[in-house]
Image 1 (cartoon, rainbow, N blue to C red):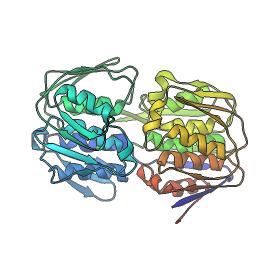
Image 2: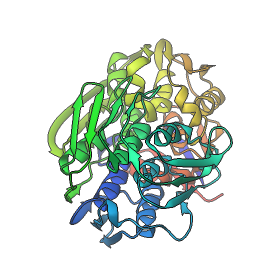
Image 3: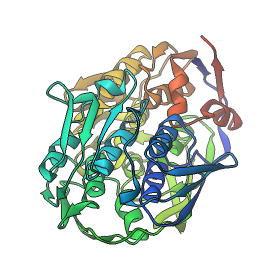
Image 4: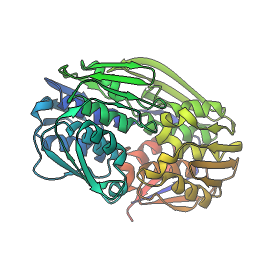
Length: 435
């Protein structure tokens, strides 16, 4: 599928983005390990999250669909998981694969995880290192342990682990393994990363303490099923939000968005650049702050973005790069080397996309330098099969002169099913076509 985008009039209206992908993954996994039945309303029915649900089913968890976006998960507890009959196909879901590796590391059977061509190029050594220290055996392809990867579970012992970089996936895998370990498991982060796993574990009765960068989990508590409504995904909401900042005359309201401070680094970056974004927290869901945001155009100024801010906006860096093309001065994005091992090399991909559209972009080893404001022009660009690159290119197309064509845009369904329809509802000229 390709996506055709042209500059349009002002974007106006209200949007509730799709449900949060990170929370949907974790809600399914932790509910499977709990006692009782959890009703998960607003579960994101994208391919990534459905792969996680199917993997849990194949390990003996009963999961019933209710309507279009609700699941009932009948928990089996840690001891209730069983060995699947074959490899678990995680598609393109790095989050699903990495977290489930931790979840099964304490079970007395092997589990093999496979994925599509993109996921099969993503290293799993960062997960294997702490799991091996805890007592699991992990095998994969090559030095970096590329999938297919097999976790041979067994008796685990708690460890203190200091990840070399802030990563919610690594932290979560270690904590999930820690549920089966003897003794406490401690993770000391170098910088704050998204904390959905800690919040949900606490809400379900786990013995978990968070003291600044140190998270301590003590095993033994029985998780209790907890029904919840999954809030809108901030990472998805960011696309119409930034589009509204860049298209003259726009005003877009984002409703019921997740406002967890470990996820809203993009707001801090945009506000540092002068962006007019007004978040308002209104409620809490399963310990997660939820609220609304309003975005309007306003002149942007360049900024230096790096350090502890990057883990809080790791998925939004491609979108920030688009905004930076319209900011006065040179924006420097640094400390973002992790983006080279996402669904694509996102630093390279965004440098190519924005350069093709007339942007002044220099690729760095760990980030990008972008000088603006630069008038963008439409171009034909390749998403590289990466949903965030595809949607970032679409936002750039709305601010560009002429027509932008994004090839291989079917990947958008990985996280934002109906993206084109949502943008059309705001007035965007954004059309899907079969290739």
